[in-house]
Amino acid sequence: MATGRNHRPATSRSRGIPEATVARLPLYLRALTALSERSVPTVSSEELASAAGVNSAKLRKDFSYLGSYGTRGVGYDVEYLVYQISRELGLTQDWPVVIVGIGNLGAALANYGGFASRGFRVAALIDADPGLSGKPVAGIPVQHTDELEKIIDDNGVSIGVIATPAGAAQQVCDRLVAAGITSILNFAPTVLSVPEGVDVRKVDLSIELQILAFHEQRKAGEEPASAPEVDTAPPAAPPAVAVTKRPPESGPDGDLPAVMPA
Amino acid sequence: MATGRNHRPATSRSRGIPEATVARLPLYLRALTALSERSVPTVSSEELASAAGVNSAKLRKDFSYLGSYGTRGVGYDVEYLVYQISRELGLTQDWPVVIVGIGNLGAALANYGGFASRGFRVAALIDADPGLSGKPVAGIPVQHTDELEKIIDDNGVSIGVIATPAGAAQQVCDRLVAAGITSILNFAPTVLSVPEGVDVRKVDLSIELQILAFHEQRKAGEEPASAPEVDTAPPAAPPAVAVTKRPPESGPDGDLPAVMPA
DNA sequence: CCATCTTTGTGCACGCGTTCACAAAGGCAT
DNA sequence: ATGCCTTTGTGAACGCGTGCACAAAGATGG
Image (cartoon, rainbow over all chains, first blue to last red; front, top):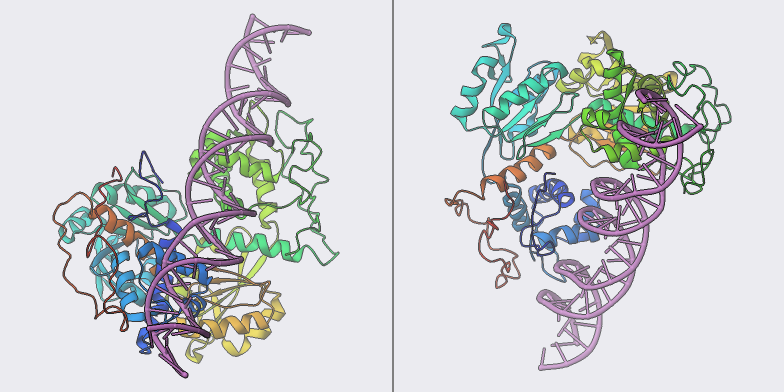
């Protein structure tokens, strides 16, 4: 976001890789790496797309933003493409990362193998609990929050992972940003507010589950005629002011429109 | 639309809530729950949007898909909206969930508080390691993979969480689906293939990090005139066939469009 | 050297999502 | 009641992402 005033030629494509494409590059890279390990020399857009779980036209268009790698009639050179995508994603350099909040999740992240591989390196583990200080997790000693600024500065860290409870997340975030962090991966169930120029991506288990539940409910509520669930009446009258008003729904739970194929 | 009230806004398909809206409902719900706990009676779209980190127009449009809750000149009744969104998301009912793969991550998930709250209940923990069987994690005894089908059937589970290594994910997925699971939350770094009608959402740490790295690299590569990084030559000649060809880029690393404010 | 066959790269159209801007709706004060 | 003020609900415009379909590019075989 924060697309202030970018008077860019828009379609100039010089380096304007669409966000959606960027989000898929890691997927392609993973598939390509697997092919590389099997010493497969070249791959067609069709094969690679299938391995990455996307449409082949989409894949070709994605690659077209990177340049004209690939040979017509043949396909893409696996090694070459691995390199190009890695470079594009910035994985040819080393990214030190700090993890703040070494609870269950933080520890799991520290132990996560895919973390260390491919350009990322856990530079430090940070927690506010003094009892944890010095104790090694995944072979790395936990350091106290007091050291946060120093750690980031000393190691030139620009990416931070927040795995604290929700209540502490914003505070930690502020300190990370003040210390120079410009990219944050947030696992805490909170909306973080950051200044312009700082990127935040969030991973939220409960949101994902709720989205699944929505679809699950829809699937379940279409064939069976059971549909009890009438119970659990609304918490109270709708708005306190507009008691007379009522949502123009067909009923207290007017779902089951029985439309929507699937 | 706007045939007046008492009629569904959407064109024929009364409950066609856009996917993007569904993905934001949990966000609104979280903000509303916080307001509810502080006994705030009503909230305006502006306030709520700010709390949820979105645009107020977007929020209003999102709510408009649910119906005409809200009172003009006043705002939305917090309690009422909490109920409506919960119902829409299917959180008024109980969703048993199984977690497969009780490693570091699986254990962290099992312990995750936000899991149990709000409609979800960990029905069982499953792992292929016989050594784990019976051992309690987060107060729940781990069961062996052999029991998978029975567990799902007995408990009527329809949502499964995969936290296994990548190599086992597809196999576990197949068994889950065969056993009747229709929604999967996948933490393994793999593309899962599932039959029609099964929803999969993936949470992939390393993909998120790589996306951050991309943006981080872009930020870093624009102001400084240093820009070495020429090193690390490509792994070999480009395609084995088109050695003469070369990406028609402006240079080996033709970035620095020098746009983007910062 | 030419014909044919394969696969890329992309112009184009379509649909979804976002945002703006404003009329309608309702509360509130006078 | 009447008019003013606040806030919702939404029509309409815009931009992005997706997928189709095909011409261009190059390999391959004769």
